[in-house]
Image (cartoon, rainbow, N blue to C red; front, side):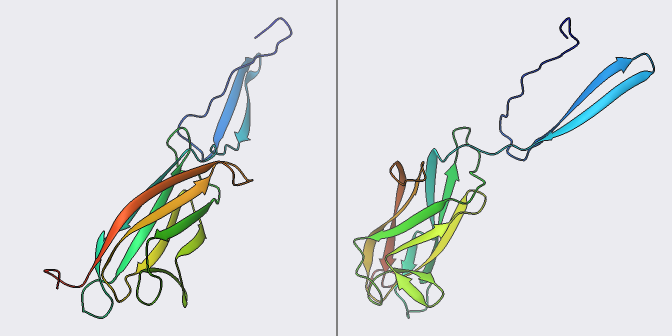
Length: 168
């Protein structure tokens, strides 16, 4: 506290994006005086994107094995916390033949090689259907560090679409 009775403290957010409650207490002549303020905190801009495909090997449609995989992108800020605000994530199938022969992203009744999905709490999920031909494809997920979509963050993973075991 300075000579004018003003106290100053520095507040930093480390690892929490849920907000904070700061309480100040002054011990007065008639007892403690307490004041509380709620601080809303938000995470930083996306700094990292990771991609997982589960399962990484799927079977062509119609042979009885698993023919659908889930692609999950995780978006983190510079503190490795999930980016909690909605962020566009673009998933792309590279080197695929397209529906119905090649793998496609499924959204409702629509099949496509590229799809944009908004993240929720740092996670964006889309399903991939195998198609009818065996292929080895790259799945890519990317997002942006800026609203202008000029600064891109990208992750890739391979998915094998097989005809059966052992590869027939």
